[in-house]
Image (cartoon, rainbow, N blue to C red; front, side, top):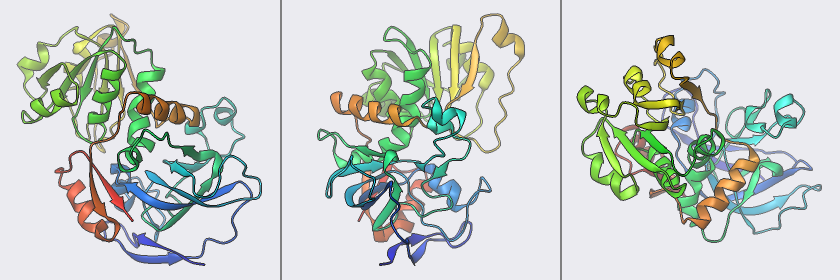
Amino acid sequence: MPIHGHAAYAAKETLKRYEYQPGELGPNEVEVRVDFCGICHSDIHLIDDDWGMSRFPFIPGHEIIGSVAAVGTEVSRFTLGQRVGIGWLAGSCMECEWCIRGEDNLCLKPSPTCVGRNGGYAELVRADSRFAFTIPEQLDSAAAAPLLCGGVTVYSPLRNLGVKPWHTVGVIGIGGLGHLAIKFARAFGCEVIAFSTSLEKEKESKTLGAHRFVLGSDPDRLSGTANSCDFILSTAHTDLDWNGYVRALRTKGTLCVVGAPPEALLNVPAVALLLQEKRLCGSAIGSRATIQEMLTFAARHRIGATVEVMPMPEVNAALDHVRSGKARYRVVLKT
């Protein structure tokens, strides 16, 4: 039976109806009936082929919540009808150094959910069952969908780069990623400073859990944060005053980039890092273990994305809404 969805046929074009024959279900695969699928900026990058890795036509979507519709012969973890989630990866090689170490998010031969295969803007989607995740009952499906990519993207560096409850954490950009970073950092017990170029985000950031707000586009206000943050997470998609944010770090502080400004260069003098042993780094989604841990943590602290739900047939209007920057804070498609 064919699977129906909404596909990009060429770069930067609107999505159109599409169907494909999925073939026989693999022994380790799971087929999921899609209930909700978040719109991630990575989907837009793939639709526009910004990264030069898209293979047209393809169905985007990798923040998926649904129910198990079929399982392969070797799958014993899931039962039909069980609620599960699928994120950026639908599989990995399971053989490279990084997979063996349990860091499958760094696999050298990954299988992204909608690169070279079809994703979640559809009625059904398939993945390696080892990359499907049990969704705790406390989590609402629509609010949980963006956690499968956006959520773990901000949770993973907080969890794995040494952030402690007594630290001060800065979050740059109060959008789809940033609003989740504020919620997670607050739940970690940290003092949270929200940095934004938009003054209108001050009230919103404090409602989300930030203790302080700084207008990052104001050099004087940014300089006033010097030596204040143990950790700064940049979720922004534009170039920034990177030197100003490095100065905002305390000794041995870390600036971690998870947003992907397409043309940004992090021009920071080496001496700005050397003298106080500051670090610049990036972080890519999270391992399978980190994703399941993040879902458990989110359920315990009642953390979900702040979402706008739109019907799947209105996918092009939903994409335009995200492109406009007006979404608060994630758009989720409902089948």
